[in-house]
Image (cartoon, rainbow, N blue to C red; front, side, top):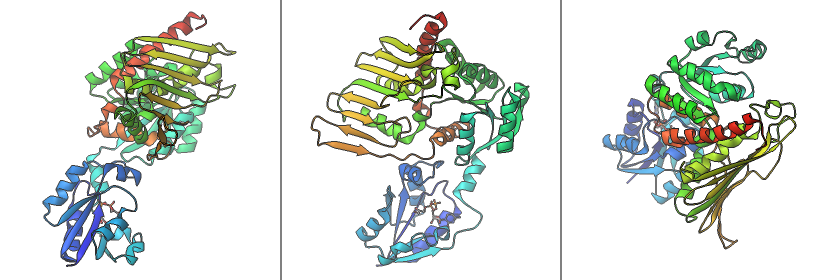
Amino acid sequence: MVKVITYGTFDLFHQGHVRLLERAKRLGDYLIVGVTTEHFDEARGKVNVIDSCLERIENVRKTGLADEIIIEDHAGQKIEDIQKYKVDIFTVGSDWTGTFDYLNTLCKVIYLERTPDISSTMLRSNQFKIVKMGIVGTGRIAARFMAEEKFVSGINTVCAFNPESDSGNLFRKRYGINTYSESYSRFLNEIDAVYIASPNETHYEYARKAIIAGKHVLCENPVALNRHDAAELFELAEKQDAVLLEGIKTAYCPGFQQLINTARSGQIGEIRDIEACFTRLADLHSRERTDADYGGAFLEYAAYTLLPIFKLYGTNYKDVRIHSIKGEAGLDLYTKIELLFDQGMATAKCGVGVKTEGQLVISGSNGYILAESPWWLTKKYKIRYEDPNRVEVFEPTFQGDGLRYEMGEFVAQINKIGKNQYLLTKNEIIAMSEITELFMKERMKGKAI
Ligand code: C2G
């Protein structure tokens, strides 16, 4: 009996896939089809797969061509499978010609002519309305957005807004897109969605106007400086059927989700303490160090440090205390937020003028999770136990600077195929803005916190 094996994602199952499977089947007597998992696709850079793994398996099964369907979930698995299933022929489409020649030592490798003019990517972009995106703010964060944009299908940045025309002009020269400096409403007329990367105090107003104009909003944190404004934005977004996503990029990173789920799984026992710390020394002349009203460590990093705490304990804290060390301009160089919950305690620490280890430690009754700086771009974490020799290390995938994950989710939600609203919830954002409100009240009173 001649055994044949082939692999694929088989997203939005199409004629190209059917023809490939038909010819693969004819190469032998028994066909094994490997279907990729979501995580494996993520790891090999396919971030916009639409159908779930089960749907994709079902579509392969319905062709009646596969004698056996297996799951492909890691690099190097093909070598294992070929040996395990005693495969005679490995086959795949001609778009992969050469890539799998290394399997020649184990079995015969055949590249089948790819069916022209059809692909999952093409079908995905037909399904996806290309989102015309505008950026508010043309500084460092906006530049990062432009760099990541090319990795996310479905986004096309067409213009930018910045009331200071000098910075806007530089941006226009650099990226060749139209910039506006006077009229926000003219800018909004050009686009379907907006990415807000302007100074902190302007987020709420820009977001509100955009939502009222019926635009989707991806807003850098903090989206609002008090509870009322945050809740209002969500209400407005619901009314307008607009997507409102806050840009805490950690929330959308696959590794961070995995870390949170590991903590929730009970592996470290009952969670009793969380310490989340994010410090980055800012230049003495930067906005973070000079803007007495809206600069400082809290507004820069508190959202990141509160995120794991709310994810693991929920948002019903019993007590919160905020302590800051203030610098020259009167703003906070270092802030510590202490929270108390029914099940345990937590500390969130942020710094722009004090440097610390910058780690995330989740302590439980059985062991603890340690993620070192930069845990907010989660690439690695460990579980440690009483026995110092027992250490489990996790190294999840992480690509680019992480922004692509939140951008991908934004486009998916606009196209109503995003299923990941749980990654950062309205309640979590509102609770964060409540704590921001407390902090801002003290700051505005001008008294030492
Ligand atoms: N295919 C084809 N003609 C098309 C489109 C796809 O013959 N017009 C083939 C591909 O070459 C592949 C199979 O159909 O053999 C599945 O395609 P995808 O779902 O795009 O999966 P792919 O990313 O190519 O995965 O490690 C290699 C893989 O697992 C193949």
